[in-house]
Image (spheres, helix red, strand yellow):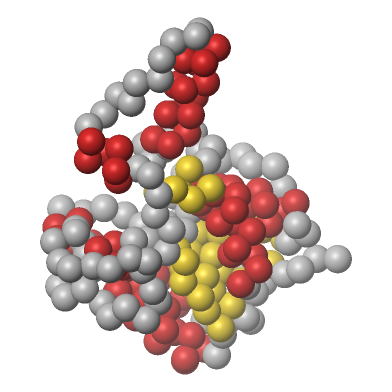
Length: 227
């Protein structure tokens, strides 16, 4: 039995790619949206640049999407530009789906929700464990802009939503520079096979920052469950 028709936005990344494969295996019809679509078993490719409103509308016209899983972002030179670009992408997406029978939307952000933007990361006072009830960190943050677009659209179109905030995500994704955790695992495996000591190839700061990781498939299971 098909569970729904999912649109995975950012289907070639670590989070989106693993999620798309998981949803297919779990019985969903899955459309995978990316700027440069690639072949992925069971995933129906959709090619669009979300910065282009008309191209996004054309690519999504008539698709019977019931669930959106938003797993993408784009980096700009500063946080104000990040806000403009990323919120614009999400607005274009939901505008293109305004006639779809959306039931739920999931957004993936991360720990900059609690620690601040790239420009102010970790500069304020924080307490762990992080809680959803924590107030937003003062200053510009494109995560907050994405949430605001999601909340506004959900109220207007009447679908439910949730937000996921993992730290470093590890998993298979060809050419993705966020695979540090997986790279370290391969390095450690080679050290063990060669009977060599495993020496962390980075700084103390990097060691401390990389201790909190989320497995992409565990995140995928959580996202399906909350949807």
